[in-house]
Amino acid sequence: MLKNNQIDILIESWTGGRSKEATGFKAERVEALKEALEAEIEKYNELNENGALKSVTNDGYSETYQVERREDFEKRLKSLAYTYLSGTGLMGAFYV
Image (cartoon, rainbow, N blue to C red; front, side, top):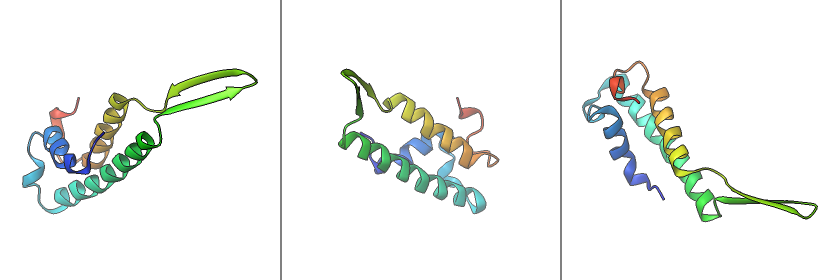
């Protein structure tokens, strides 16, 4: 389970440590990204608290599947970061 206090660590790792020195519009973009990541993490944690497995039953046939795997969630977060920080030079070659 991801915690909101890990956001700074994630952003620092994605930006190669450049986000802490960001000023002006770059700092504004980093703050907006933090807010977006907090919202996504909160949604993900709620899913896990309520059960990340989803069951479907149809006329005696039953399927259970995972709503979202953690690795897919983390990729989605990194993609979100790239979207928010695009054009700032903060993600640069560190985006994979």
